[in-house]
Amino acid sequence: MTRDEAELQDTLDQLSVLGPTAAERPRPAGQALARLRVLTAETRRTRRVVRASWHPLTLWRFTMTARPKTMFAILIIVLLFGVAFSFPAVRAAASDFLGLFRVQKFAAISISPEQLARLEEIAEQGLYPGQLEMISDPGQPQITTSLREAAKLAGQPVRSLTALGQPSRIEITQGGSARLTIDLQAARTLLDIAGADPTLLPDSLEGATVDATIYPAVYQEWSDGTAFVQTESPLVDYPDDVDPAVIGEALLQALGMERDRARDLAQSIDWANTLLLPVPTNVATFSEVRVEGQVGLGLSSIDGQGNVILWQRGGRVYMLMGDQDVNELVRVVESLR
Amino acid sequence: MTEGDELTTLPDSLLLEGLGRGDAASFEVLFYRHYERVYGLLFRLVGNQAEAEDLTQEVFLRLYRRPPAGRAEHNLAAWLYQVATRLGYNAIRGRRRLWQRNVHLLPDPAGSPDTALRVEERETRQRVRAALAHLPQRQAQLLLLRQMGLSYEELAAVCQVAPGSVGTLLARAAQAFKQVYGDEKERQV
Image (cartoon, rainbow over all chains, first blue to last red; front, side, top):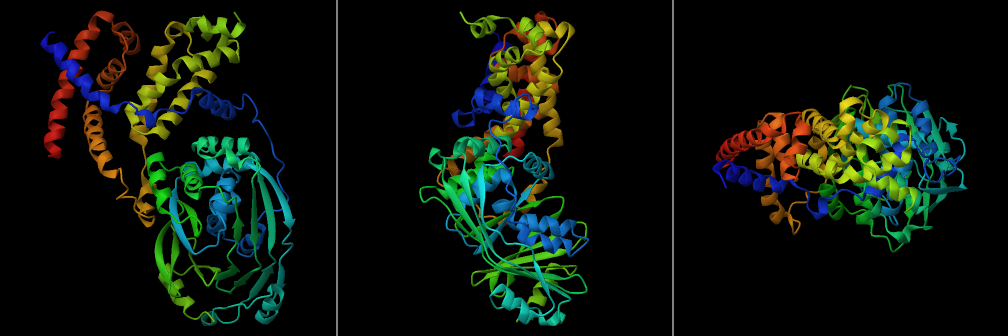
């Protein structure tokens, strides 16, 4: 062997570390081809599930119509229940990993605009991971100007921000519930299109049902545009034999996280009580905030379209949004009665 | 022998003709035939499974939508590797890591049992990849494809050089890599 040949062989040996390990091998060619077919629209997806007329976001949608400059608010609403409820691509994962889920804390994860667009595209295609059946419709929001009336309509005490005075608008949306019956094939296809590993979903999910319940929500708005939403934490009941960490891993992948990182993180998160919010990097930054003695989440819009804080206390979830910066919003909460 | 079996024995050039006529079965055979190697090249370039899979998909999307014509149709593998290399380098250049800045709010996975073991492996990979990144694109491509087991003839087709010059080009690339890799190790020490 000449010196050149030996040197080349050494180099090739060093380069061999770059090759994929067994764990890094690509998905099977058949799966990759199926994914390609979906994206090229050469073949239609295997199953189309009818879009349900009821959407959990109805509960919150009035907050957007009440506030015109709400590109940011819309996104926040999407962020609030984006994972758990609004993106069909991840609805199965979100619902399932939540288990008997109640929000006790929030965690945020950045999502690239490209990945967000990808998920939205999937949503627009009407792809669902199963059959969604409305059990109880929240109906149209009711409007009042009285907090006492709001409490009566909502069937629960209503808190308000006394520092801001009397709200100029109060709306109440009733609770509702829905059941998702999972179509495993469809759920896997969705994950696959979203860039996640579809095989993470266990076979036992086929035909499993996930029940989601949302409770009456009260929305208050002031003349300066500040808005406050309160509701009891949504409840999601999922199959007992599902490992939430595995579903969470699929979810993190669907949000664009690298697979190794998703695996590590999924093991670290308390999925039964943590609401994961995907935050588009071009829209907002986030930080931890302490509100009413609880660890909450502050979201600051990048383009000055408003800021938001989210927290939970005693099984209730609160969201305050306004032009004030996050710290100022936290101070406003001190007047919550 | 079924029609499918017959397809799998056809050379790339005939399958490409079929693809040009809109024959989906021809595309599938080509996909199965080249998928793993295209992925292998892209994984070595970008070092990330999900990204390599996405880029592999993009390579085959381009094949499906605009199959190569003219001279290239006689060596589809070369065309695929050229496209893959171009996309891989574009991805590296355009890679945006903005989203990472916020990830700190999530629990830190450090301390998981296998973390220590993987660190060393990852560091070696990073050094090798960093050294490769300093080489001209064609030299890096030559080395990676040779490491993947391509013959000199195949390398010549991919890099569009005479087969007789591949040995010299590889030797130069190896020398350049050795130099840069040594510098990279020193820098990190």
